[in-house]
Amino acid sequence: MREAGDPVRFKIAAARGMLDAALIASLWTQLAAWLTFGLAAGLAWGSWAGVAAACVSAAVSLSALWLLIRVAIDRRLFAALADLPAELRAEFSALQTLDQALLELGWIDATKAGRSIELRVRGVAGLLRKTVVLSSLQTLVLIAVAVYRAL
Image: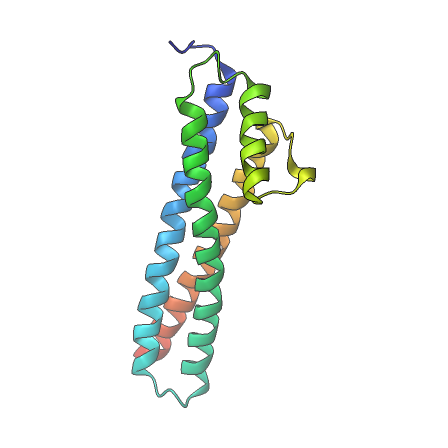
């Protein structure tokens, strides 16, 4: 049974909420990229605007895809932490076990092992910021192509 006052539980919940938001932003970025490609295809591909829009959109989309993969992995890891019983989720022991698994997979280096839950939640916040920046940039490219095409 989980205790209502378990602060780690709330930190994990905050991280999971940010990861859900990052997932939505990343998915929108991918959709906006496809819409941009569709609109840019309507432009003359030999024009600088069509080529520039396609290149910027592709670069943003690929960057966002990498972040989407990270978000998907982190969502699963934080869900696994959240599913642990409170007595097993003691901050140090659960995070130490998680770090050991990530080290064995080669997904982190030894310098990242041992981070507190607070540092991990801050990392998730940074991941969310990056996805929102890319999503905003992709949206601006989409709007620019739509306006350019309408002219």
